[in-house]
Amino acid sequence: MAVTTATRPAISVSGLRKTFGDKAVLDGIDLMVTEGTVFSLLGPNGAGKTTMVRILSTLIPADGGSVRVAGHDLTAQPDRVRAAIGVTGQFSAVDNLLTGEENLKLMADLHHLGRAEGRRRIARLIDRFELGEMARKPASVYSGGMRRRLDLAMTLVGDPRLIFLDEPTTGLDPRSRHAMWQIIRGLVAEGVTVFLTTQYLDEADQLAHHIAVLDHGRIVVEGAPDDLKRRIPGGHILLRFADPTALDTAARSLAVVQRDDDALTLQVPSDGDVRSLRAVLDRLDDAHVEVDHLSIHTPDLDDVFFAFTGTPASAAAPAATTGGHR
Amino acid sequence: MTSLAYTLTDSATMLRRQIRHMRRYPSLTGMLIGMPVVLLLLFVYVFGETLGAGLPGGGGDRGAYMNYLVPGILLFALTGTAQGTAISIAMDTTEGIVDRFRTMAISRSSVLTGHVLGSLVQAMLCIAVLLAISIAIGFRPTATPVEWLAAVGVLVATAFALTWLSVALGLVSDSVETASNLPMFLTLMPFLGSGFVPTDTMPSGLRWFADYQPFTPVTETLRGLLLGSKIGDSALMALAWCAVISLLSYLWAKRAFHRRAAR
Image (cartoon, rainbow over all chains, first blue to last red; front, side):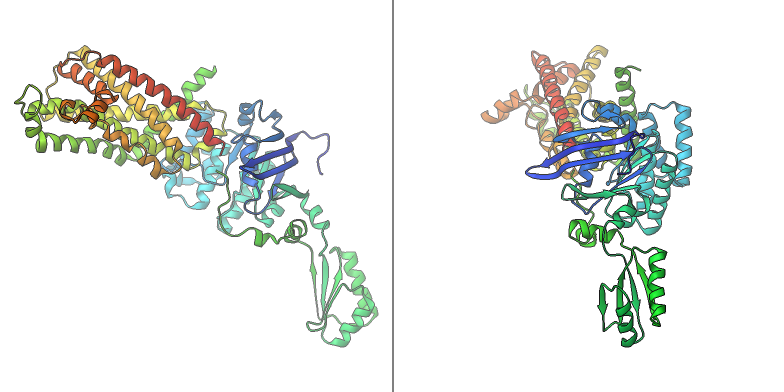
């Protein structure tokens, strides 16, 4: 793990369990989130991500295990925890009958900010989240992306140092998604700790410093994105040749893992670095073989998912947006 | 600030939110006022003459029946606003905003108190409009200022009890539709008491229920205060019912609110 003893954990969880009926939704979770980083809990629908966020944000009690959030014990001092965190859930938590500005004002009032301070923060958030003149329209007319931005802006009114984002981009179009990513990066640059759940592999890959893969209530693997990719097989160089003779010659001079005589391709294991690539090309040069086409495949998180859960992420995470425990 | 001060500030914030809702969505308040007004006009102008003739003492007319009817209509209006409360509570809890409140370091009770206070404002608005219309079409209360104050007090106490009851009903509903249906039985209660006709003419089983259900002493107390009829022990019964219903509903609502979080 990338945690050193010098940094204070923003969240530490050990042996966390939660059952609904006789179904163990979280089955002994241990994890640690370093202050100032993005921690991503990655998993398909129904893996227990939302339950995890609901427990960590004091919404529901755990059935076992110990949790400290922002330095406070979750069960002993829930109000201290609440004062330190901000939560943007999977389901929009804005007041549809109020305007964007009134929603933000409501948050400012509930955080007991003074009039001037409240107004200052609201103006800054409206500006930062590009709500503009829409801020004076009721939230019921907002687009999906704008509603998420307002939702997150409301979370930030209290200036929390730790925020929970439960699937913040599910259901957003690509542009809104990238806008959300930019916002999250901006928060991290300010030193905010982010606990992010997602079912999108690229999202975790893009944003997270540390990823934990959750499947059926257990963390099956965790580490930095690059670590995870390195720990699984699948990285290779794919070579295509113009004719069977060249394929034969090349196959004799290389350590081939897979040969396809119909497609005239060879797969050579490689972790994708320049040295191993050069070694392969040198050998082909020595054997006087012309390569028709070359491509490098580094494992992506899809491979990670497959390697550690036994199911492809795409099959485990259908497009449906259900799966929260409410 | 002390925690009590926070509770008050947060409740005031939540009340402002409810009042904004009313202003932003006036059709709900409009409907809550409209229904009893329609019922008032219907009973006065369609049934009034006939029902007036059946009043005890005999030979009452439309005007006499209107005087008899208004307290019942006022209570009917309160059951309507109670239904509105259940709906708005259920809308809040199903839409995720309450989950947001729950993750904030605010006074938890303020979420419910905001709704209750908002509903009381709405209920009193309804009552004021209804009284104005009633007086305009010939309702002639004989109450002194003190009796008026007492009548308003009884109405507030009743609204308070009904509101907490409907907050609980709204919280145990898993959809807005359920929340809209559950308090429906309340709107029948003034009819199954002395709200619209004296209970003497009802068959014995129903009459027994009508005499002892909470709406009857409340109706009789209001009638006594506004029109000078005999109150007797109705006032005490009315206040006791209001206190019991308020307390039990409050406890039920509180429990439901916490349980909802644990799902």
